[in-house]
Image: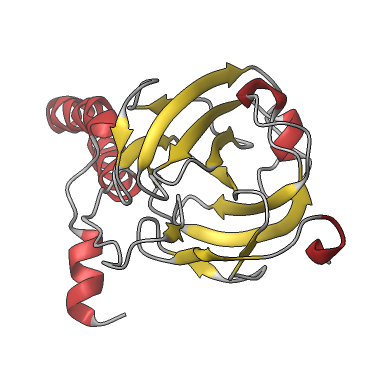
Length: 232
């Protein structure tokens, strides 16, 4: 990444979900100036951390239609076949699932993977185990979205709370028409985002790769693969 791109990323304005945290840190800083310097430093450090954590940079999705994009920044920790969460009503057939782990240092704004319509949103309470573990997909607190693509196929996007994450924010509603790269929400302080591909579509990414939400291509919807044994 170039110096200019890095600077734009670091200085990106905060997501609205972070405004209260930034303001709170600023208030503590001002109070500390008149009471105790250690409090002022604490407020300043907290404010700077929140400005960094909640940064919300603009993203430019690829112009070619038929692509499925990463729903989040972070590292791919799982590429496996699994049924989508039952609450989404997408059936029990296995489909490719790409799990992306977001560390404290990643942008935590989630993005819409492709053009379509949100058909279902379901929140499920659960545990808060380390989001980098595969069992987080089924055991952790999560917010799941089903999106019907313009060609009629369906995908699932699941926002998953992590070890220290305690707040999942979803900014879209059932029935909304969404576009690739749009913001769909944010997860506070370490988390995971899973993407369930349409049945028969093979991912183009592997474990260990770094994703850029709204820009990195996860799959080409025009090229599929047979389900079942073809997952291996």
